[in-house]
Length: 393
Image 1: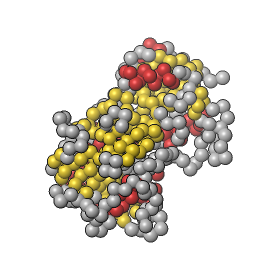
Image 2: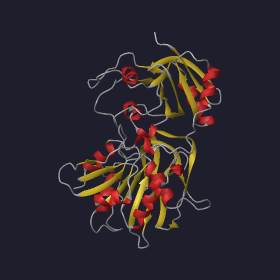
Image 3: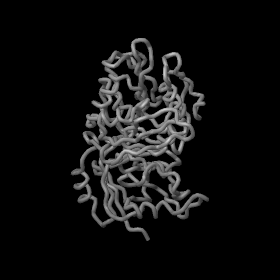
Image 4: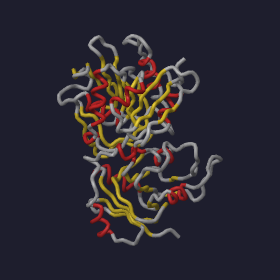
């Protein structure tokens, strides 16, 4: 029988369940994910570093674990919370159970609790620090340790998840373009999506300098997703500002959207409980189409107070506009930067167009980036069609 386990939030709310995965203690920020599938991709997403993830779908682990779907080399979540773990995984691709994988990687979890009640609590009170213990600790002593943990706000974490050495993801088929990708917590599917389109991707550490980027001689610059507070991540913002003055074509995803906003002079702020899941509706204002998208973020870009979301704003690098908006809460989900002549210089989105394990409504954004990098691409040449999604011919 699994050992008893407890989960204690920093406001004192306590849940009792059973140990799931490794036994022991863990701490982090409690957040919830609304995806009904894709738990393996969630666990291996570096953006979840130092977060304890609560799954709102009740049955987790049904398809086990395989070696094809991870988004990185390890599980990054600080802890894992599920209601009803699968007793026996069932999939022709499964190599081992989720419970065994969590245990092998030392990830402490808890099962058998009311995750609906926990999620409602986080929605009402906001994401907060949390501890899980299966060591026999009582709630009061665990709560004391929870309250001594660092908060997510003010934490610079990209350097903790980034690659230590640069590496290259070669183009699939004919090489057409070169991209320098700053790894702030990059998911493996992202350079793969670019490689499918004939792009050779040079993945650089989060500490990469201007010289490191220029040495690649890139046709475009990409900033990845990643964990932590964008306001605490300053060196990468300064690097981006320098490259924007050099007319470098830019594309950013998630954390790369927040850093793009800060580079343009906008603020960022912490959302009450964030967006995490694969079912978030977003309006692409450049096409008028609604996309169902994959999200994992707890911070967002702050559009200037008093300026409508549909109004262009002058920045030191060109004219910025909000290109995408979340239809649930009007959060800024994307930015565009244009030169005075209307030429598109760069863009970003808050969500994940690589979208492993789906949906794929936003895959066209990789095509948009490739088109923007083509020699001689201008405002009239860059497609805003969202009907694409495959490789550019």
